[in-house]
Image (cartoon, rainbow, N blue to C red; front, side, top):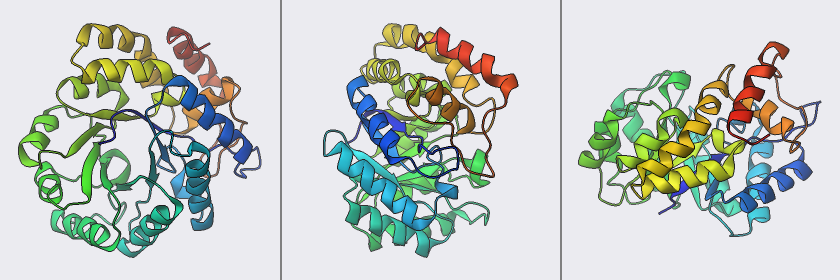
Length: 291
């Protein structure tokens, strides 16, 4: 089971929007040095929605090659068409990813039975560990705990990233799911509590900016050490909030650029962080003592 601080990595781009592979390699080495436990390549924070299929697969392959087995690599392979999700998941397996993170179909609003059949079809088509991803604030689709429980009994569906921030779901997942099913927070602001309640880790945006602190906080929470986890989380609270002052990944890309790790590149329809937000995000970084 993959556990700990799992960073939903930004995809570095130059100012024209072209993928910057040299910065990507630099960024991955930074996370290895800082103790990040695993990487998600081309998830929401990695701008999966604006990368074409070739770019998507190329970034995953680059991440796998650079990481070279030192920590797990989870590939974002979700789509709102089941056939497309199967294709991306198959290509991620071919690239050498350790697992796939598959967001609920967006925009088309499937029923719970539709969600079940969507994930079942992907799991049956591609033999790779698969993590469900529920983020209704972005997809207009909420996968309910009963559906998660049903899916958890499919052999290669191994966990869920739940980004609802609803901590009451943790116990529901535990009650309804297979015993070895992994639970990951997808909401930085509640990730400490999520792990203290029995979660196995956090798929984190904040970890892009403060990877060492997030690793230490999540590790403490998984081990039931609330005092240590809380002390660290207090330093991170402003980042948890202000990295969403505009749509993710706008603020986090600005913050990672402020650390000197990437260039000022993002793709339309997303735009670079506006100047009126600079001091807010910079202040949050200072509170976390990363600058």
